[in-house]
Image (cartoon, rainbow, N blue to C red; front, side, top):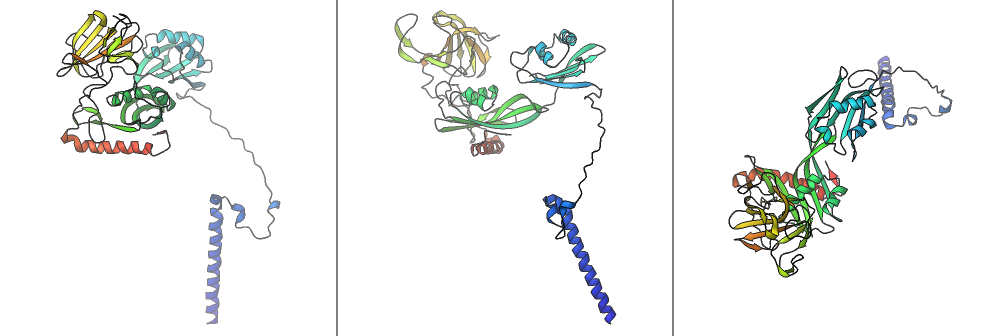
Length: 439
C-alpha cells in the first residue's frame, strides 16, 4: 500500500514537471513574435555577456538575370512622354543607337499612334547591351498598343488591342480662381471637368456664377493597363456647391440603353435648352434695349448675348433642332439659325465656319458642335452673337425660365432608386471626409 502511494506521488510529480517543461517550451517558442527573447527562459544570475557570438559569411551564387523574352543581355527601359517630345528624342532617351532609330522611324512612318505622343504616357523599349532596339510598346489613346518587334534585322509594326481594367475614382476640389484651376490642383482630367460643365450647365452659368469657395465632388470611371491610366470614362455622379446651394447628379441608363443625368430623386437634369452655347468664355455684351454700337457708332438695341472667345472656339447647339438657315446675312456675317420644338429658335452670328456636313434641313442634337467662333460681319473682335427667339422675337436667355425634360419613367423607377442610392452614398463618403480623393 505504501509503495502504491509512493508510485502515485511520483507520477504526479512527473506530470507536474512535464507540464512545467511544456509551459517553458511554449513561452520560449512564442518569444520571437513578442520581440522579448532575453526576458524569458533565462536562469537567474546567468551572465549573458559571456555567450560567444560568431559571424558566418557564406557566398551565394545568384541566378543570371534574363529579359522578359528570356534572352540574356537584353533590358526593358521605360520613358514618360514629355510635352514637346518627338519620337526621335524619346528613342534617344531610351538609349537606342542611331542606326536603329533611323530604321525604326522608316518602318513606323505610317503609324498613327506615333503621330499622337500623349504627355504623361509611357513608352517601353527592349534593347541589348549595344543599344540595338529589339522591341517597343506604346499604348495610344485609341486603346490599342503599338507593338514593334525586330525580326531578321527588320522592324515589324502592328497595333494590338490591350485589356483595360476599370476603376471608379472619387475626387473633390474647391474653387479658388477657376474650375480648371481647381481640377488641375486635384489631378482631375479636363475631360471630367468638361462633363461637369455639361451636367450642371442648365442650373449653373459657368461664365458668371462661379465663386471662390465653391466646391464639387465627382465620381467617374477610369481605365488602366498595368497600372497606367489610359483613359477616363463617364462621370457617374457629381455634386456641385455653388454660392452655398448644392446641386447633385447621378447617371442612369435604362434597360433600353437610354442614359442621362438625374437628381437623386429622379428629376431630369437635362433642360430642353442649355444656358449657353459655349463651354467657356465671358459675356462681353448683354441683352439690352440700348447699347452704343462699336461699329455703327450709334445707340441701338442689342437683342442677344455676346460671348467673347478666341476664333475657332466650338459652338454647341443648345437643344435638339433642325437647321433653318446657314450662310451669310448682313451684319451677322456667317449665321446659323436652328429651329427647335414649337416656337423656339436660336441664332448664332459672326461665325468663322460651320460644322462639316451641316446644311439646311440637317438634324442636330443638344450639345452637338455646329459652328466655330469668328468675327465676320459687323464685329470688332472675335466673339459669338447668340440670340434666343420665341415666335421669332428675341428674348433674354439669361432671364427666362427654361422648360425641363421628362423625369424617370415609372417602369424604371425601382432600377433607378438602386443605382441612385449607391452613387449618393459615394458622394456622401467623400463629403464627410477630409480626403481629396478615394478609389
